[in-house]
Image (cartoon, rainbow, N blue to C red; front, side, top):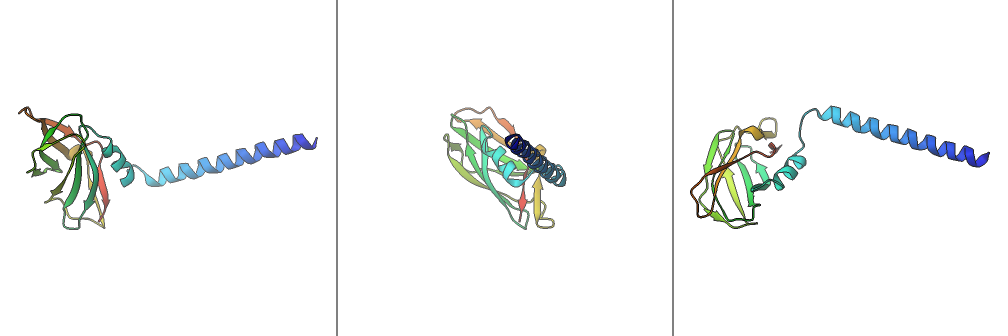
Length: 148
């Protein structure tokens, strides 16, 4: 009888622990609402193809500095990047696979309450395969957001 009581207490402890963990996680998700944390957005962008944005920093003056990486197996010509309608022409033309460049996007809205957000729907990266003139567009993999 003692062995069965111990097993029963063990099962009850597991159920209580599991229930508390589930309730805590559900509460955390509800409190976050629809906001995507910066780390999740950066993870999505690091996996994007053909262009990844491996890191970014927002400044108080409405500037966002992007680190852009060619995630394709081909050399690509980066033409311009548009965030929220603010287009930045790129001077460096051809980037081989795996290479990175830094791009400053200016003329964005200044930081509000210490935070910035660029909707993925307003992000466009214009490029072409090296040696071709056919321009292609990559759209946002995720929002670009953070604190400044």
